[in-house]
Image (spheres, helix red, strand yellow):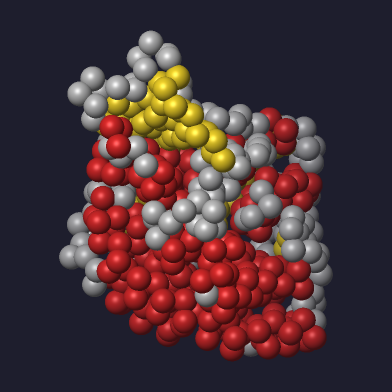
Length: 474
């Protein structure tokens, strides 16, 4: 029997990784690991750069979720300047961050995961992709494309460009929103709301088809971490950290995100370049926690917008405590998309958005600054230290994907043990292992800061190293 089944690298994720499935002498799956194979180096690149350059530089960390990095970086800059940001600038940052959540979640659900959901986990590889979805239901695929287009258009209209917008800066933003821009954004909202209703109905109609996957793909107890506002509702820009457990109990509440380093630690393993964050009071690896859509819906008491509130109440009825099944990240992602559209609608209707008072200027008044916000994949922290001239002396980026690292590894192992039969290996089994990771929608360009091509190579070898079989695609 082979000792190791290697999926290298994974497909339909954003970045570069591989999975090792270890097989014992009896021919059963013994363990599995999710390896991130690229090196992370952005913190080092930041050293010596002026703090005012940081948001524009940090936008280049990722082409999928650049806005969250811009916002977190700008907020760290706000703290270093010691200034209060004008309300109109805060509203701009909120709008663009919600737009990024919308477009990033649309990419994850419609382009990366819907081939599994609409066509089936065992569909042939040549069909199990976005083109297969278009062939099956062109109208549904088009709605996904349009939803992402809406999010990107908002980023372009407010932030100046769709990818790597650097309009947000320490102290505020660079330009005011015009009435023309406001009206163009508002005109998209009715179609987006209609599409979200259709997508949610379709997803809920499919859930019963995946009962085995729901039960065995990343279904385990863990902590959940997310940002909430003073009322305990979903909050993507500002607020306090809440941590709950798998029974739905609040473990910690009102935690200051600016003190994240006092309750979150980072461990390392020799087989991955991505770190393993954990909740310090429970130690490593007992302090495993999840972030992102599933975690945010578990810790929030409400969404704070009418349509998303109705969906959230229904979502919470899926479990007696917290919803622990990683498969439900997909449904949670759609509920957050609906919430984002509703929030954008609210914000563009606020007259204060059009104020031309959008930036407070100052020299650096502090040597340390931290910025936090909710990125599509979870809570994001930017932590900067500067010298007397405002040059970055040290930077730390705690990325949402890395915070899910312990959970993703457990999900991979649980899925492999249940679905993979080494003696009767089929591609659909391995696709389910990959699907465990796609639930989390990892952004490895954020967490490792590298680019790469993504073919799939599966090798089966004997313990001696003899190659028994090799399958390559892409």
